[in-house]
Length: 443
Image (cartoon, rainbow, N blue to C red; front, side):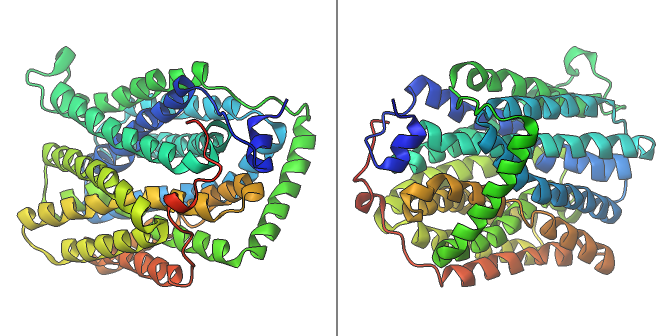
């Protein structure tokens, strides 16, 4: 009997996993988004800068160094880990292990009290949390081609992104009204010690674990290859070398992956420093930052929904162009406006284009990749999102420190969007979903 992998590669009709298994897989994005929304973007990032470090420029520099250095580790280790896991067969043990690492790290951030006394405790645990969340997401992404038919990879990927946006909004609402704004404080939390803010980090740990359980128990995994750890390491490194060599044979895909590497780094940096910039430049309170985060996730979700139809009509490449143009124009406006009102207006406008950029990138590769190399290409797709993850945060941190201005520091992000846009001009169109449905499956 053919495995789902073999059916994908041999061009046969793919039955795929059950809808319960696929929705359980997609729900993991809802779970994982809590860490990126609360810890990495809107709450802990601001808390670290304003309450732990206590000075906005130094806080931005330190936060940029933390995110940047962990990005270097991710860039080096991610493709190796993915290749080893691919050769060993099973992905869920890796996903479960890294998920639990992030859950533990998020919970331990409760003990980070205001002031520099817990600076290194914060650095250690938030770094481990970032590594756990990012590595777990790699194995989550690589499970998708084993579960869904090739013609519907983009659809399920989009639904996963959509659940992630919704999960981010819901988690922010719970954090805002259940902890930060609750007065008297929920469970008698001491506001002077920022326990009402620190409790949101425990919320992330619980949220992530609970909503990851359906994937752990209901989504099937690939069987073990039977290779030992040493054999899997050797075979994985060989596969990585082979994947890179084959990618070079398809120059248009390689150029797309490099373009995505650039604009994804810019996008990730925007979200990494979003809360820090809002607090430092516009003096937004913790509550205002959370409200902005909720609104941003709502607009991103709406954008992903609307542009899903655009993607079907004009293809992923053209949707990427529209999204990058919208993000670039909005980000430029955010950097020059002085009014908090206009910051909100252009921030919401930027959010509309975020979801389509992420979803269209996946749909473009799903259409452009040769069927017999699709899984290898998606492995490189994951690598392209992490390879230069350190560059944006380190550049923002360095320029902010050199100029003493958050605006100048954040302006460097525009270079990544521009470079990605220009390189995408050399990438041919892969067509629309209507032109790529010959091997559609049942899900």
